[in-house]
Length: 112
Length: 114
Image (cartoon, rainbow over all chains, first blue to last red; front, side, top):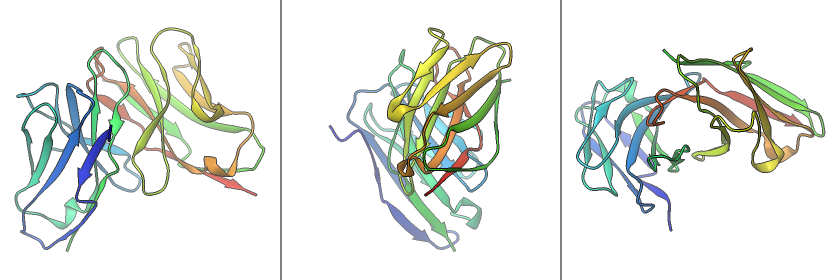
């Protein structure tokens, strides 16, 4: 049982490049989330998926797209990276009816 | 709308001293409240949660928190700090009753001095 896994762990992009952050969970959880964490700003929700086939915008969705490929996987795509997207990205999952979110180890992204 | 305020972005204590990390919330519905811990270069881990049962909640690593509705507070405490407690601590409140979305505080960095 690996929990929530994220790939890659580190990534450096140039402005304008695109990339997809991958997230997978093996706990049969329904809801999944993408956050970004910036110094002094806590965690901000980018997108979430309450169940397979559904996605909703969070607090800071601009510049991102997501895909809930199946129950296990929830990917985050940056179509044209900008320096303002330099951040640490966390994926999390939650069983409906439970209360805690389970977090992955994060992806540290730098956009130059 | 729900919100969370963590008083003090940095807290420093001596090893063996009391740890007190403050969290106040606003919520239009009975809240679910959480404390998470983040060790350096790791993801977040649940410390404890309040889900409308006992107001004094015990968590992992000797931490506990008390829900005080009259004060809209959910402060985190530990009687005796250990060096391994040095980390970032986040308070969060559930935005909806289904707990699908959490509203997060900005975090408090705890330093433990020998």
